[in-house]
Image (cartoon, rainbow, N blue to C red; front, side, top):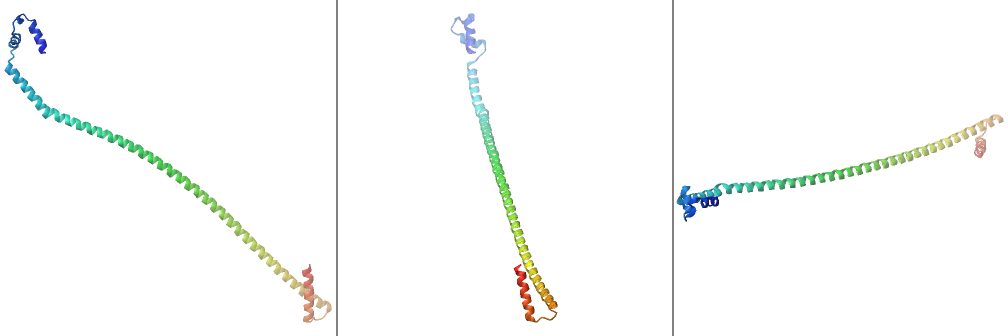
Length: 187
């Protein structure tokens, strides 16, 4: 701005003598003492504004910027932590699912083994019952044969006694019984 004023002053018709600046200053009513006082006032106000207003505002802005950066960093950390937590959660769910499948498989195997053991035990028990039934049947058959032989022997003795029309002695009854028993056992 000062250079444009000097250019205007140089172009004016009164610029031929050496007091151009002084003429220009008197034309615009500029007083050097007042100009210096205003310059000092400007510097003092600039320093006061810098110290009292601009510097605290800048400090506050820097602090807010730091807080925003910290908040963004914290948000990124939380985002990463959430991603890790979700990843861990998914991994634990997968592991739990595998464990549950393993437990179900083991339970099925155990149930199958238990079923097979119960079937084997039932078959063994049935075989034991059948064996006992056969043994009891055989015992009963032997008992019935013994009873039949005894009765046949008594019938032979009774028949022989009637055929001979006399009472047999004990000796004779024994011989007839033995011979009848031998014939029955031979068949």
